[in-house]
Length: 131
Image (cartoon, rainbow, N blue to C red; front, side):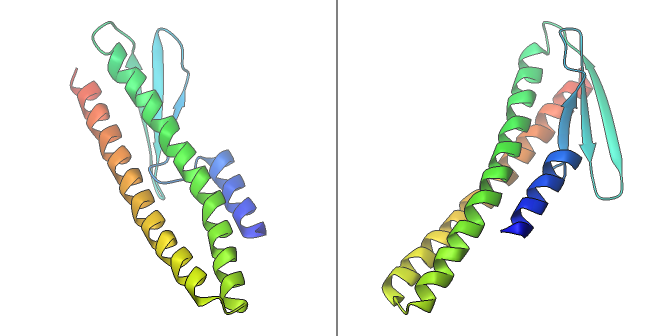
């Protein structure tokens, strides 16, 4: 559990999560999007106009969605793992396999959702750059 808290703190304060996107300088005139990778950092600035206002709103929403999904994953996975260990320890095999199946499905849906959202962010970013 301490490891989970440590990873969540690093993710929150250093914007270290899948994609590493963060929005700064959000106002009605200009928005700055920062994409942090392991070795590089890219910064994109966009002026808010009537043509790209919807794309910027979608970008903000999608970045917040990825962050929320990442933090919820950090909370759910240790809980499910601890229940797996508990049911395995008490030798309740049926519940163990049921939770294990649920956990495998949850991981695959989580990864799919994060990848889908990151692809959508990239599409919005490319659309904003070409404007």
